[in-house]
Amino acid sequence: MPGFPETTTRAGLLSSPLRDRFGIIEHLDFYAIEELEHIVNRSAAIMNIAVDEDAGKEIARRSRGTPRIANRLLKRVRDFAEVRGGKITHIIAKEALNALEVDSAGLDKIDRLILTVLVEKFGGGPVGIDTIATAVAEEADTITDVYEPYLIQSGFVARTPRGRVVTAGGYKHIGIDPPKNSTKGLLLSEKESFT
Image (tube, rainbow, N blue to C red; front, side):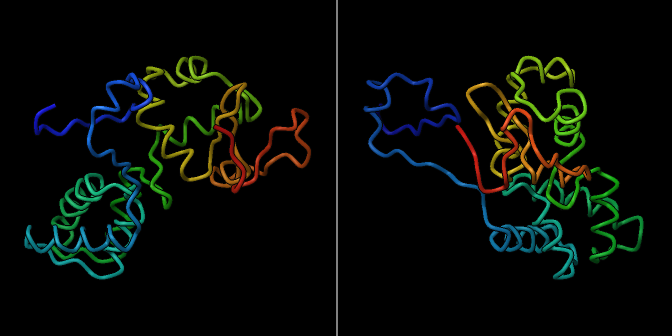
């Protein structure tokens, strides 16, 4: 593979001989809030937008660990701030992000729908991905590629051999008390997970 970078989010689908041909294999992790805050502030400076320190931190915190999302949210918050006088304050950032339905953990409407459906319709799981997809009217690939990685990384959902389950943290995030005793024995704390 002469000099061209190859990227994938599904390295497991590549055959071992193909993977072995790559000289360098890297794995990208989610960015820390501090790194995202720096990105938000730099982007704001490039776009000539005034952003309070707390506002930059708020946008970074809700950016799912991803610079692209941080920049997208910054642009939407900027639009909101322009109507309110131009400067992005912490209050304006929170109002704008709430209006965009991005919560304090960076979950959007579909993320919360997935958690709510898992809890209210399926008792917290385990549930297969096709069943979840049907219940929330999304493609299974979209759920596994877009929503599930962040839900798992954030400790709200876990994958078990029998399907997806909501963790105690997931229950708490959507404002539902986790069951005291799971009859299935699968209620997980925030620190436990299966892959």
